[in-house]
Amino acid sequence: MTDTARVDTLALAMTLATAGFGLLALWALRRRRPLAPRRLRVMAVAWVVAAVLVLASFALGSYLVARGAPHAEPAIEIDVVARQWMWKVQHPEGRRELNELHLPLGYPVRLRMSSEDVPHALSIPALRVKKFMFVGRETALELKTQQKGQFVLYCAARCGPHNRAMRGTVVVMDLREYLQWARGEVPGESPLEAGRRLYLNLKCENCHRPDGAGRGPALAGLIGRTVTLREGTTLTADEDYVLESIREPDAKVVAGYEPVMPSFAGQLSESQLNALLQYLKTLEGGPR
Ligand code: HEC
Image (tube, rainbow, N blue to C red; front, side, top):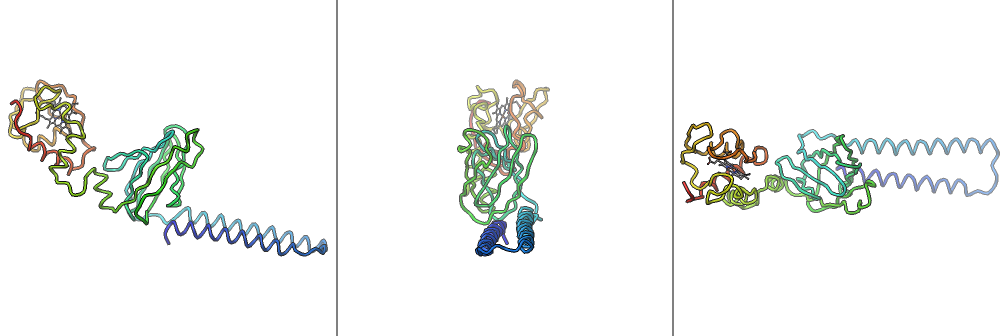
């Protein structure tokens, strides 16, 4: 049984049991004739025992459903941070989003959650889940989606005056689509196009101006060029050097420049690095 179906079955069973108990009580009290004190006592005890049993079954059922089936498979771990009044999400591939939560269909996901200010509670009604989030203490929510589409997420805690604004969208997509999305790839895009898009989005050109007047050297025609490093040594730029320069700019600092380039290690996947490299190779001209 799926998690959603389990919660729904439990809710239905509890509703039916409560209604049945109520109807039974009405039926039992329908008689007007006063009861003998002894019978009255027996009946009172019987009702209390029955009520306790029903409530205990609710508690047990809720516990079993809430515990859920532990996910045996390794899960994709996504960080969710709440603050007044927004949701900040970071995916393992580095992609971030605000007030949206992209999830892969049918693949176990573990949300690692915390809050930056007051207690919040992430609630996704379509998945029948809700979990509190605190400052300085991580809580986790294991999920497995069953259906593609868009669903509402909101904060179910009384987190402040704009609590109602703390809403977002869960977007469930195929695992393959999700992975592409999380890596920032656009379906059908060639590595070269992806490289160009990354180059523009990551604002490489802010420093690497084509005319060489930026804070970093012009990158056109870099491969094969002789590069002089700070220490006075020289090297011939090859693909490995270019990749290293992007991952760890401080490893080899070009003479005449300050080590101000941010490291892109961990932010870019292998395929994204490769795409950037492909694009850099197509840049031509520029001062030598
Ligand atoms: C904040 C400015 C800045 C940004 C943004 C920046 N770089 Fe750099 N980059 C530099 C500087 C300065 C150097 C030279 C010093 C050094 O080697 O660290 C450099 C060096 C390089 C080199 C080696 C160049 C050579 O002539 O040997 C490559 C390749 C490079 N950057 C690629 C990139 C790419 C790709 C991006 C975008 C993903 C990028 N950089 C973003 C400042 C920047």
